[in-house]
Length: 86
Image (cartoon, rainbow, N blue to C red):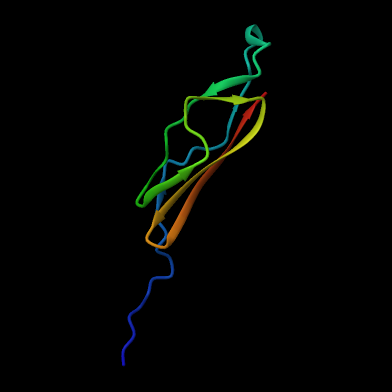
């Protein structure tokens, strides 16, 4: 009998996960309740299976948790950050 070693961590690597983003609605647009927020999508050695939001969309005032989920086989990794619009 022999055993094959199984690596402890086969989760996909995530690259370029954005940090938290904070922006203010311009005073000239005060009646507008949100702002268009842009970022570069993170990449991964695994496959993107879900994301909660896309770049270049309107976020309303307040905080929004943005989540990307990547999978490689049975293993999963996430990228998450907060978008704050004041």
